[in-house]
Amino acid sequence: MIHALFVGFCFLCDEILMVLFPSDFLMQGLLFVSNMGFCAIMLTVRKFDWINTCLFAFGFGMIYDFLFAKDFLVYAIVFLIVAALLRIWTKHLTDTLLECLVLCIVTIFVKDYLVYLYQIVQRATTLTFFEWAASYELLTLLANAILAMIVIFLIRIKDDYLEVKALRVRKGERVEWFRLKSKQ
Image (cartoon, rainbow, N blue to C red):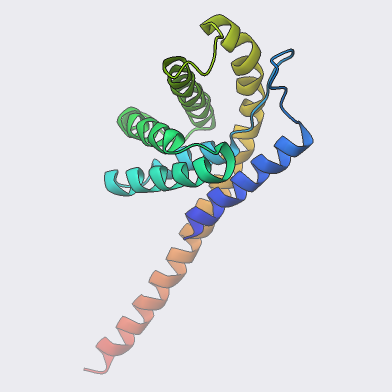
C-alpha cells in the first residue's frame, strides 16, 4: 500500500511540475515532460516478483492513461513492457546511485521511444527520429536525471522506513513467542 501511495505522490509531483513548466505542443522549442511517477514505478517494481511487477506497472499505466494521457491502454502496455524489460535487466544491477540513475534514464528513453513508435504507426506524428530526439527527448532526459536523483533519494527513505517497521514487527513477534514458550 505504501508503494502505491509513494508512486501516487510522485505522479502528483509530475502534475505540479507540468503546471509550473507547461509544454509547447507546437514543437517550436524544447519540450520537457516530468517522469517522477514513472521512475518511482520502475524503482519500486525491481523488488517485486514477476506477477506483482506486471500488475503494478499495468495498473499504474491504466491510471496514467485515464488521468493524464487520455489514451486507452497505450501507456498501460508500454509500462508493462518496460517493467518486464527492467526485470530482465536488473538481475545484474545493484542499488548504487549511479546504477539507479542510469536505470531511470534508460527506462524513460525506452518508454518514450515505444510511445513514439506507436505514434508513427498510428500516423499521429510526422517527426523524424532525430527531430523527436532533439525537440522532445533531449530536455526530458536531462531534466529527469535531476528528478530521478530526488526519486532515488525518496525511495531509499521509504525503503528504510519499511525496513525499520518490519524489524519492529519482527521484534514484537519474537517477544510474544518467547512469552508463550516460557509458559510451557
